Length: 418
Image 1 (spheres, rainbow, N blue to C red):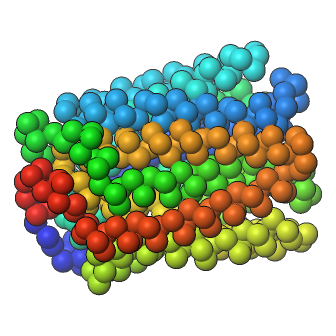
Image 2 (tube, rainbow, N blue to C red):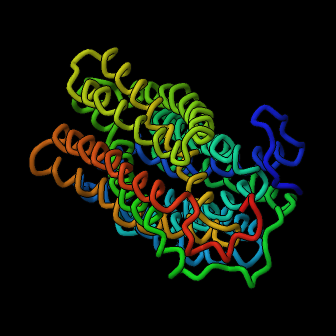
């Protein structure tokens, strides 16, 4: 399978279409699983009698475990069968999600949701590595954006499913449905062919990966962005219900529709714009990420401050469009920096740090809500997001100084598409 540069307008091969379709479906189910709990927050609060800080910790611990497991699974994905690792992860997170629906106490639910993170950690670095290995460097951001669109569609579906099922049938059934649905793409993954990559002798030591300044700077910026994004996603529906006069079902369906249209359109537009900026600037994809978050910030503040429902939804729609630009370019940039045998490991390291530290966001915002109010917590999240966007200037500085491929990794780039 060739990875030589091809025109951006050339058609996808049947293999590329099949690969993206299956892996985007995996991403769909994964994020439906992760986001289904968001509209269930008010029901869990009432059923289990827990605080906002405890509710926030459900997402926090899922992300902590996801972060911790990302490095070993990334390490394995650069050395062994990626499709088998992905399939195993799907089965694991489905079992953990089914167990979440059986929870009768906060402690049981906390453990079950945390274990979902193990399964999620198995698939993301491996799937993104397979995608970058199947596409030329010039098209990676758009290919990764198509993969990410499955995440956003799944997140929207999870919000809608949780809101509707929670309102009519109780919170347990929502977990059971997404758990069973999760097994379907696991079978399809096993029929995919593995893209080619270099021999195991070309595996890059972790110390070399962490010696790339632009990569380290991206991790720091990613921590800020993850802290903010996860906090806003976790508390968005609860904020709409308790501060903006939405019903639970109204909030879940409205935000799901926003996610369906603005986020999916945004992630595809972001990948398209980033690939074109990359043709003019070696740091073009970073420019797309930074600019998008800075454009999103005022619309987020508008949604947080507004009283009218239509203004809240409009602000969230525009903000979501720009925030979703991040998903395709960030993976493409990391893979551009690294040789193929470091694709999964480098993404695993990025996820480890950003998810581990950024995972504190929902719990911190929940604590602010307990002490003051949720509105202040979300305003702080927006400020953190802006700081993360501005830190991308540091990444641009290092790329301009050292190039997109740092000289310390020259010995590991076997061919131009690496």
